[in-house]
Image (cartoon, rainbow, N blue to C red; front, side):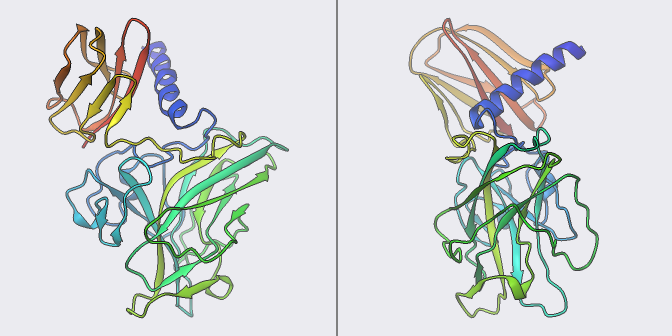
Length: 322
């Protein structure tokens, strides 16, 4: 049993991270993998691997939800399509408080500790939410040797980020702005944290409106860390709304009761569906339907891995069942 789980883990890892970039060290880089659909604001725990390093409460948005506050593209902070897939996070990064600063951050453990003397490239994308009065410049990424768990009331993390945006104040609410850079590792970095590591006095901020919403809030998507400069050159997520590969496509995604496989090539294929721990949930061989409907009503809500094998290739898809 241990051997089969290990082999499936290699298979699953190969699928997820080969699609996202073989050397991307960030797990769940576009926040598509879920424990459950978000049900309220501050529900970051609904997505896998990412945590909040302070008492700040980052938000998780996914189109699979029934709560309009955390839906995609329309939610309690505005309207924004995911850069890729159906999900993203959101963090508050600036305020006008005098006595303390309220900041929100997202944190994830890397797949491996960074190597001393090795150069790494970093990128992530942000979009200013519609409903706030301010925009800022200094959004960045800090790499830590340990998991941060700061319980103080003042939620600003006073670290010096290895990557920090310095081009201009990020004001776009329609497009995703790429924040990127590179640095040489000291060799003990094991976590990456994203946010604003400055207090009000050292943050470059611009007031865009006067609606008494005195903060800056950004959506975050597609995080990449790699020792290969090409890996982080483009968005790293997986577009889930309709997945296509050669002559096969699968929809809808997410899917609650069923999904459909369209086979434009009219070639025979075998179908196997796994859950995330490698258990085989469904298997069919020698399918030649142009359109095949698969019932998943009896499967537990989870991430499903769908394998389609033809005579010449093996194709893997990721499907979310809310």
